[in-house]
Length: 125
Image 1 (cartoon, rainbow, N blue to C red):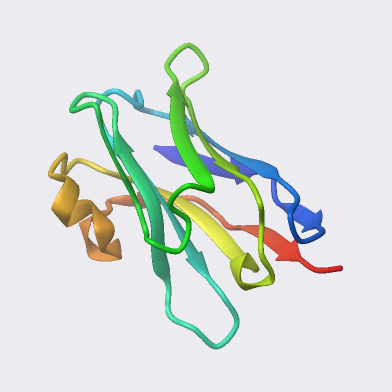
Image 2 (image 1 turned 120 degrees about the horizontal axis):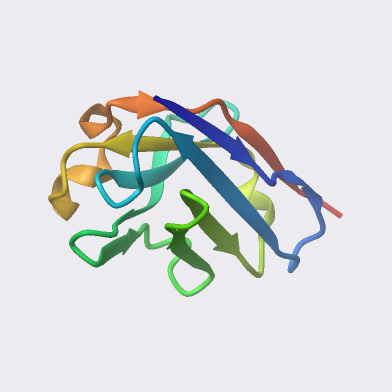
């Protein structure tokens, strides 16, 4: 089981990025996929998650309306589209997979079984 996060970079405030989490060893339909981030000096924070099988999604309040999580079963990839980025979005972003499909449990890192490496997002002018 592997998760490969990509798509990070340096972007100006107000800009957009699309993060991708390519998974292998399982299908995105069988697991819930979450995105977390860790900013310097801060704890890891759940940003968004989705359960394709349940058709449910979650967004932390600070990104709601600016981010969209989606899945491509053919590519076995989950995306996090981030728009109107702010300096406070600067962090290392991680994707993770969980066998748990209960949305309320997917907001915490301990519910996840597999983690990918992070991708750096820097929002700065």
